Figure 1 (cartoon, one colour):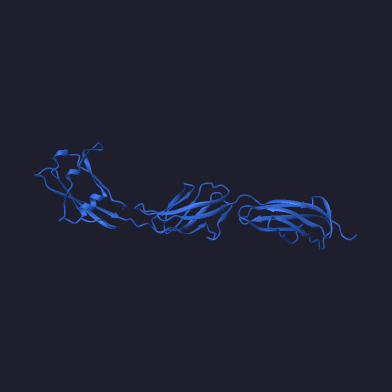
Figure 2: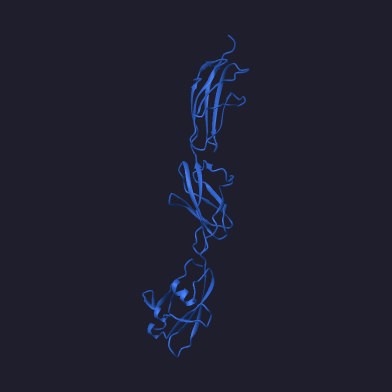
Length: 284
């Protein structure tokens, strides 16, 4: 199977090059042979030479431009005028049609709408035409490939944190290449950065005390941010667009020495936990 046909054949080593009496080719059965004897060239790889039929020469032999499809080239050969003429068939297929682009590209078992991961060697999956070679590329460098069985998966080498634009293509047996698909993923191995201004550790708080500070999450985004006292219920913390937070702590039913625990988690599961020991004062 080929995109642009070019056929190269060697001659029988047992015979002398100048003893070849007949060399013809046909793409129209045994009634349309064309002389190709002048195409024989000496060849260091073959004792008695070889010949090449270019795409243009094949069109000439056929009598028209070869279109996509299967063909049988007949080579008629005789090494001297008295020798028996042999006809050698050579089958080939021309395929210039690019395969469909890969589809349903995703990170492993995650939905295709989820394009972030904490895995620096993620497995990328998808669908493609059976027997096409699926290739992945990042910044001009190969990330690997695999033969599609209708579905495919490729585990990448180590990727850096941040947005990664991966180019996915399918290549068929003839070498035709599909249109590229851009698959952007966000690699995030960094936990949210948490800065608490108030309360500070080992301080006394009371009704109306506030929880203040700032949280920074630059990659996959913040999934949850909560606080709790000891093993109590987690309470969501509202944050502003710039990541700052300033809320009144809920001290209902609490007093004495407590552990104030703040937990921030991003969308890929990276987590930051900060524990602040405080004393809760009630009454006057």
